[in-house]
Length: 559
Image 1 (cartoon, rainbow, N blue to C red):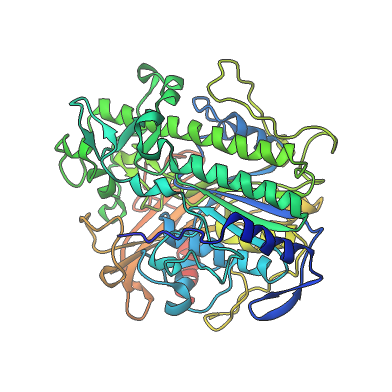
Image 2 (tube, helix red, strand yellow):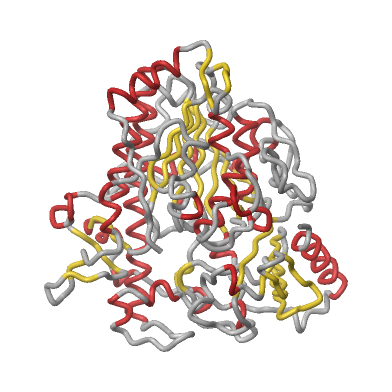
C-alpha cells in the first residue's frame, strides 16, 4: 500500500513563535475553544517502537545489547507480561492511541479511518492537546496512510504537522548491496551510511528531530507531549553495518522451538508472506506455506534483528541523554512500548500476524519522576551508553518495580492521563460507538502511584484477536482485507494460561459467531511457556475451558 508522508511545512522560525504564543499565553485556542494552557505540568515523552519483542537485556535476554533501554528500565516500572490487542501495526496503534479495542475501532487491516468507519473517538495526544499541552509526533506513531487519514490524524491529535524523515521513502527500495555488486530490495540489509541515499537513515533523522524539539520546548518552558516512533527493528533490517559485530554469526542459535507444533490448528499459522516478498528470501525458493527457511538464513535473520535492536538502543540512548542534559528528567514522564512482538522462527513462523505470546507480548515501562526513579533528583539518570562498547554493565530493575500481571496496551491512554494528573477517563459503556472519550483499558496507575500490592492479581487478563480469511494458510492470511475476513481468533492470556477460540466472523455486520467454532487452543504457561503443545483436545480441565470460552465469548461479541 502506498504511504503518503506528511512533512512539516512550518519553518522553524514560524514554529518557534507558534509555540512561544501557545506556551506563554494564559489561554490558547484548541479545536475552536479557548482553553487554559498547561505550563508547569509534567511533560510526556512517549517512545513507540515497531515490531520490538521482549528481546532486551532488562527482560532477561542475555544475548541482546540494549544498555540504554535497560537503563531506562532500571528507573521505571516494568511490565513483563504486556500484550498488544492485535499483532499488526495499524490496528494495534489505533487501539492504544484511542483506548478502544479493535472490535470497537473496527480496524483489522490498514484500509479504514476509525473516525469515519467506526466512531469519532478522541485520541491520547488529542486529550493532552485539549488540556493545553503542545502535542508533537515524530516518525511512526500512527501508522501512515488511510488508517490515520493520510495525516497521522492531524490536526485532531497534534499541535503541528507530524514529522516523517525524508529518507523513509528509500526503506523498501533497492538500496541493499548484494554479493553481485548490484542493489536489491532485501530483507537482510546492513548498510554503510556513506553509501545510502541522503547519507542517513529514518530513525537517525527522527532522533535528530526529536532532540531539536526537546531543546525548543526547554526554551519555551511549556508542557509538551512528544511521541517518537522508531521503525526498527521492522523489516527490512536496514541498519548501520557496524552493529553486526555485536552478534557474530557463529554465536547465533536457532529459535528454541523452530518446528511447527504437531497439534497447531492450520488457521493459527502465520505464513510470513511479507518477508517472502524480499529479493534475498525469494532467491531461496521456499515452499508455501510452511517452508522452512534454510538454517543458515534463519541465523542471518536473527542476527539482523538483534543488530537492529542495538541500533535502536543507541538512538534511544541519545534521546534520553538529551532529556537529561536539558534538565527535563525531573519533569518528564517517559513511556516506552512496542506496537507488538515479532516471531524469530518460533513455531516455524516469522514476523507477527498471530495470537502467540511471541507476536503479542511487548516491552512496556513507565518512568515517572519522583515515583519510579532511583537516586536523588540532582543525580544523572540517563547517561548515554554506547552499545558497541566492549564493557557493558547491565542495569536491572528493582524487583519491586517489576510487574508480572498480564496487562494490555489498550490501557496506555487511561494510564498516561492518570500519571499526568489530568481528569481521568470514564469506562466505556457497551456499545460505545457514540462516545468520543472513554476507555476500554483498565488504568495501570495503581501499579505506579499507590503502595497497593498488585502482585498475583488473578483477575488480570489480556485479550488479543487476529483475523483470518480461511481455515488454512493463504497468501493473504497474514493481513486479509476486511471484506475477506471469515474467521476471528479471540485469545485471552491469564497468569496461567493462553486460550484462543477461532470462530466465524461477518465483516459486514462486524459480528463474531461463537456457535461457529473452527478451532481452539489451550496452553499452560508454566510448563509450556513457548506454547508448543496445544492441549485443547486432550485436556481434562473441561470446567476451566468452558469458563475461559464463555469469557472470550462475552469479550468477542460485546458489540
